[in-house]
Image (cartoon, rainbow, N blue to C red):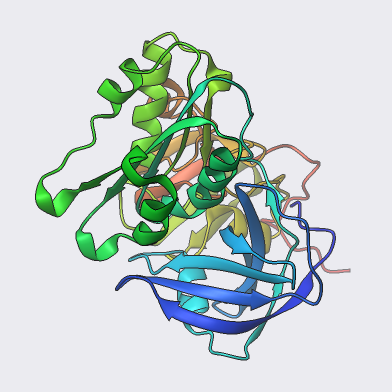
Length: 332
């Protein structure tokens, strides 16, 4: 597992409700840190008595070392949002320095920003940066209802008529394919939202024959097609069966059971934690963006950091690292 080199003690100095399901947290760091557009921080959270790491986009920061993030309370979450919701003013947590994998590539081309739900959080700093550059841009913001329009006033002030909002409760549908088809060949698309949106955009982008480098997305592997549930992972080579509970990732369960695993991003982006799938009793709920739609459909590999099983069990072959035979105990 790759973790930040340095953890800071960040104090919660402000909390406000942005929507019925989204809370904003203002964190005071011990020093001011450089912040690039599209940045996120990693935060240590406590889940079922274990320390885990979650990533949250930075909405804004200032020169006094204050960083603002927003967290959505998700039904069936892996536990990070529950922990964050338990914080109060004065609470202290371990947080990393901001890191950005989503900073815009500046140029004379047009930019389309596409956000859905809590995916709006990294788009705020990206939009600010593009406006400051005088870039040609438009932003599309899809929400479930008008009550869930986090940061809408900020975006309206920043973008004006360059912002279009689509609300499902008003039967307003965002046609991803049509928006992609309307773009100039040189345009860039930046998006963040649920896995279904990401999959649809990637599929249409590829079908349109557009350059992969002009599609940029941010994901934290928190959404899937099914609600998380308990399931069992079988590892025949090691004679092991490991229970993965609904609030735990497969990667964490395997690691805690002593299975040697390799991982890095823990957001379904790098593919290092992927394992071979031998058999499944249920449906693979792929939540990564590393594998293509075709690879997901094949069901031969799965990213253990974010993806799950909607069913009872999965049988896997983890990476070979000279694992001992954990099915037997030797008494010396």
